[in-house]
Length: 464
Image (cartoon, rainbow, N blue to C red; front, side):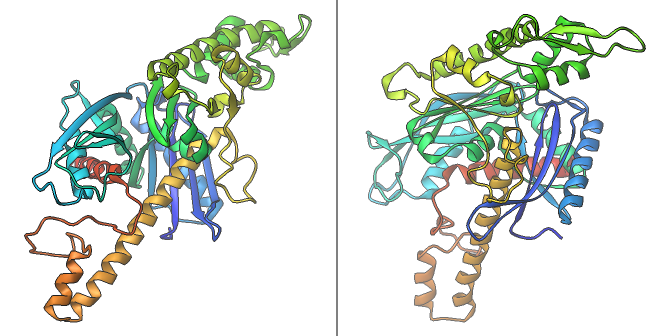
C-alpha cells in the first residue's frame, strides 16, 4: 500500500524510463526506497511516438520499483520535456478595485490567470506561469507583494509553453499503465531542484541537463527561474555519429562512448587503439581512440554552442544578469569524460558536474546519487512537496471545521472565517474566496499550474 508520505517520480526519457520511490526521513532528507529502470522504446527526443511501447516500458519500470521496495504504486509525478517546449517573457497587470485593501493570494491568482489567456500558436498551451518581479503602483523590484496595498499590480512572467498533444500523450501513457497522475513538472525544473543549492540560484547559475534525446537548460538568478530552453540534441546524436564514423552497430557505438569516449581529443595518444568484435565471423575492427574523441568532440562542441547561445540570449553578458555560479552539468551525458573541461573552454564559465546527493539521505546507494538520476530524484522531491502541501491543507481544514461544528457563538464563527477559512469549507457563502494555506510559504504559481493540471486530468477522464 502506498503511504501518504511516499512519492513516486517517473522520468520518461528518450533512452530510459526510471521509476523512483522515495520518502522524507526524520532529518528532512529524501530516502530512496526502490528504483526501476527500463529501456525507453516509444520516445524520440522527449516526445512519445509509440504509446503502446511506452506503456510497456512504464509498466516494467514500475514493477521493478515495486519489487525493490515492496510498495504498491498508485500515483506518480511525471516530468515533461521534449523539443516542443519553449519559453517566453511576458509582462501583465491588473487594476484592483479597493486601493486600501492589502494584496492577497487572490490578486496574484487573478494576475496569473490573465497570463493564461495569452494567444499561443495552434496546438500549444501554457504549462507553467512563473512570476519574476512585481510592481505595485509603479514601485519596481518587489519580490513579495502580499500585504502591500495599491491599485495597480504588475509582474514580469516567465511563461513555459508546450504542445498540448505531446503532453496529453504522456498523460494517456501514465493512465493506461494503470497509474494515477499526481502531478506534472518541467524536467529542467525537477533536475534543478535536486542538484542546485539555494546559494547558486541566488548568485546566478545555468543548469544543463544532457539527456539521451534532448539537452535541457534552466537559468536561475536572484533565486528565481529566468530562462528555460530545450535543445533537440543529446547523447544519442553522439552515439549516432560514432556509429556512422566508425561503421559499427549502435550497441557497440554506445559502449565505445561510455567506456573509452572523451570530449577532449588531446587526451588520447595516436597509438591508442581499441578492438571491436566483427559481426558473424568477420574480422575484428580496430578503432583509434584519438579519432573516436574527435568525433565526440565536434558534436559536443555543437551542443555546448547551442546552449551557450541560449545563455547569451538570456543576457549573461549584462553585469546585472551575470551568472556568478557559472554552469552545472547533469544528466547521463554529463558522465562523458572531460566534458566539464570542454564546457569551461567553450563558454569561459566555471563549471561543475551536478550530483543529486545534497538532498538525499546519507546511506543512499552511490549509483542513485549519479547525474543520470537527477531528474528522477527531482520528481520524487516535487511529489513529496505536493503531498506535504495537500496534507497541511487537509489538517488546516479539519482544524477550522471543528469550531464551526461545535456550534460556537455566531461572532466566534465569523471571526474564524475572517482569519482564513477556505472557500471549500464554506458552502453557500457568497463572499470572495479567502486565500488557502495562510501558514504555508507563498506558492503563487502552484495554484495556476494545479488548475491547468486539473483541466488535463478532466480531458484524460473524458477521453476514456
